[in-house]
Image (cartoon, rainbow, N blue to C red):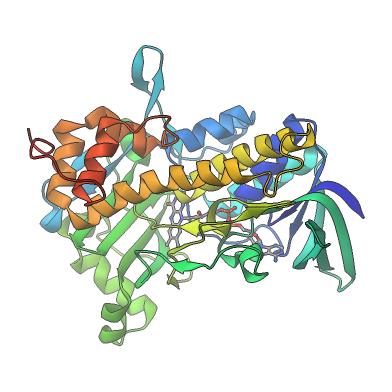
Length: 415
Ligand SMILES: Cc1cc2nc3c(=O)[nH]c(=O)nc-3n(C[C@H](O)[C@H](O)[C@H](O)COP(=O)(O)OP(=O)(O)OC[C@H]3O[C@@H](n4cnc5c(N)ncnc54)[C@H](O)[C@@H]3O)c2cc1C
């Protein structure tokens, strides 16, 4: 079959991309190997991620489904002390304003996204993309093995990799080497609990983060009135040294990691299988070329601590759709890599978040000062996802200095 754009993966990145392409009048076909609904981790959105859904006209449906509203994230320090709060705020011509985003149960949300894309006329194949099709110059589509076992070639002008951690294009050697990320030696063990003590009132749907020590932390993300996603992230070595089952490890950590977490989950009633993911941090610097580009997790994932994964997949979906629309209008047709601009912008945005996360893990005291008092507004912008900057903000420059990426100035912290 023929389509304008073949999209590998029908998760939030792939479906958002298909809908952004549809808004630009471009036909696409999603290839998804899993049967939906299916479990997936990654449930908390940044502020700008919520805005992407509004741009796609999905806000009413999000409200109808009663996904918990997130107004911010509270981070509790060791011993449950020194919490700091980062509100989700929007930015308009008059500065920051009150705003909210959502938490999502992924089985429901991903299904909603796929249904929305299909209802807008996006093509769909239930099957696995097994390899890209190529000619001497360019990628020309994908070979698919359908769920019924039929092998079919999907010929397209552009292939968009939205396969998440499966990194389809990288496995096909079309990208540069997939390097290990800074947070590679970590394991996340997670499940869901019923009950859980939330904040009272408006912020009941907020994300809570509990820090014990470097690289040892937990999340608490409300999924509906009853269920809360909970997960513990630790160094892989520490998990192995405990010689416990995933379940025993999680249950013990929930009551030992941080007293505030124990207070939030006094009785541990697990309602989901206990799952684990390790070595999830990686970076592929070059992931575009003639006829192909990758979005979100399919080229890079940094660290789950500040919930950027969904945002990058969905925002890059928007950028990839715009780059594809420009290409169809003739822009960069004769270039070696028509999608280089998209790649550079994507790397630059993710590099900003890398600075934020590196500073949090490596310089927690300086980080807290910057968030609390020195560069509060810049930090709120970065946490929301406003990371595609023409010029680096003063807050970003300060993070770069703290991380040793530009020469330090004595006045930068606490001045
Ligand atoms: C421990 C942990 C916690 C996280 N917490 C958060 C969080 O709180 N907030 C947040 O925003 N992000 C979080 N993330 C990240 C988040 O899970 C991902 O960033 C997000 O799911 C990426 O969406 P996607 O659409 O790019 O990929 P995915 O959601 O992974 O979707 C990819 C789809 O492609 C399909 N696929 C793969 N290969 C093929 C193929 N060859 N052919 C056909 N189909 C294929 C898969 O079946 C899948 O449905 C977390 C990640 C981890 C590891």
